[in-house]
Image: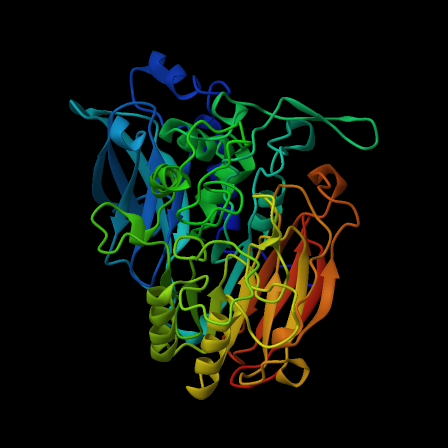
Length: 530
């Protein structure tokens, strides 16, 4: 059993945060929700606030207005906002769908930061809307403080959206009660290819009911439709409240664009849902909306490289290496080629990952992978038996994208890089795999763990088959026997990582939707092959 957390640094804030969230509820569901605030005559932040990519001395604050506005952020060490510091953010307009982020810098390390966002009339800065408050804790430079975070992925998938009869996205309430330092979302933040209907029939004869919007009534093709997909999730009060309490580290995967997409792909004419057949065109629009709706340091206006992959330093105990297994991959195929320099990461990202792993002095190096390594994920979207992830089911020597992963694992071993742990989502069940050379066809690597969690609110699916190339052993799994089990049927998961500041031990807990612990694994620092 997991210990029951004592009241955390954010717990005392929940009442005021909930009250703030209630003040900013969208007045209606759908595209007309935000403009309904026009009666007030002042800008409103009906979609809440969120923070992202928080470091020891900085963080990004996000907001969306209902109209043109100037973003202003005030920060304080206390909830009273006495001696507040003011930050002048960007002008929010139609070019960014009225979203914007403000970078806070020069913050104290390891301290609780209270913030409030004000939206000012751009023509009269004295006219501001109701402030929206939030809080986050900067990364501590003190090892003894430890680190605790959550991860999961896959939201509003397979047509299972915000169900008011079930209380919406309840999993965020359970996650918020654990008071984590941050949340790592492993991709599929939206399902741009998954329309949401008003109702769906359940196996027991009952009816699932969704909140619906115009943008979620079809597959996303236009920039406005992609933006509407991100906005849809923010209709959920649980998510808005969680965003105001817990900073995030966000990555993306396929459903931000389209199921199983890869660069250069052309949508088959038989998929009549799409009038735009170029996936590259869809990806450009999706990436823009993605960058507008999340506070991501490498995707902010003016960011040097404009990429999703990055490393987030979380103090002396932890570095998080956020991968992008979507943007630079080769085409999905049977994945049995004997030479594959591009692989799933691309040459440039692989070189970056090697370099940053070598530079890391953190005790633990979490590799946030948007797809699993040894679980077979097929792709039948083009009518062929292609492979979507890394493993192709052949337990022999590395082939296809496995060649790139073998190169990385060999590098980690020979550079004596310790403390690597892989976290992922994508497959809509939860499991723990231990990879061991003694069981593998490819043996030039050190043992490591991979933990899978999710979905947050999507269809659940049976456990994926294992590929023996890297010698995985599935130590734990919980998955349904049937495909596409709705959230009403359970099988919604998130994971927790807790690094002790004194011993340095890393504890992984796989949890169900209500927070119940299903599996626990403790890893000791500096050891190989645990």
